[in-house]
Length: 138
Length: 384
Image: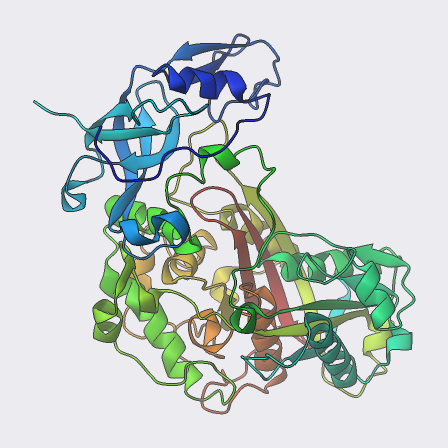
């Protein structure tokens, strides 16, 4: 993945550490409730659907489609000079809709329903890498 | 319900570098009490949210010299004050208090900063904040884009919401933006976050407002015409287990609750004050409150539907958040006060709805594409 967008610059809390540690290994971990089989997003140690506390983790396939998006043309902070960039909800093949960026493409080519693929920022020794998506190629 | 809004006051200024937030709260609180013909010593309940300086309600209640037996600091963003009125009406009905003061105000314009709660400890934060949603508009744009995709809503239709607001604002001497705009003006204003342009966004203003809610025993001995609180509903909508559906808002729950309690339907409504942080915010609320079929909001707002006094549903005759005022980035109070003016027959003459008997006030808060609140009030003329 080739993006100028900012990398992760935060220290995960203890509770979130396993999720973010997996990102450094190139995996997006999803949570599944063993009682009702709901795939839960964002990660938490219980099921917000049935209240179950037995939650297991598995890596996402990385396949997704764009549910909605926006091309940001005016922004603040570390994103201020990086416009235009695309913020999107992508629907993972496993069900959850996840906030992310669509990168490695012309923002004008992004559209709802577009098939996109998971990618991570290049490893840099940090304790977390951001998950982003780019259009499916070929 | 047996409660009444007996006093209301909107701060007349939109840029207030010379007053503290506490002073703004005090000016509007005292303004609403004076409007009602009441004194601070009559107040026994205080309602505010996180824009109040100090510790919850304690600092401001002391500053104003109040002795309260009922306190409520419900915080749902810009919808808070509508919830406060609903809660005050319920508390009055239960005999928990007699005169409730609901106050808000802030200075995002002169302090040059966005206001709002600290989200650093919220559990969702690291899954939502790192991808460049740096302003509220980026979040709402996600909902607007999806609405266009699902229902064919166009930028021209969204622009109609702004056009109506601007036509009203020219008659409000206090409005921040008083120049009428056209659909083309909106479409040719800079794109901020597709599909929302600069003129799809509300203004950022200093200011504030307050209302006084009281029971029938208090209302009947006051000189001023009061407004009846007929119905209230509120709701919160989130992303559930991670499958947010952006086709609707929490108004689908708060609206029916309020209409049912009031025993009326959208067809009975003479005037609407609808939260318009962005044009899409109001358009989706109109659908979800039942003023038109789901997905037909774009068609509904065409042809001057929202333009007072003779449109089918005159909306935000003060100019709304899009043109008049969005004090502290929270528009619920200012919109509610305009509904009070309409029901008292005290709106600007050019936009006063003839024989205005029944109004809906709808607020929303938080962020439409992630987690948001809704609160709906049905208000009636004194004799309603």
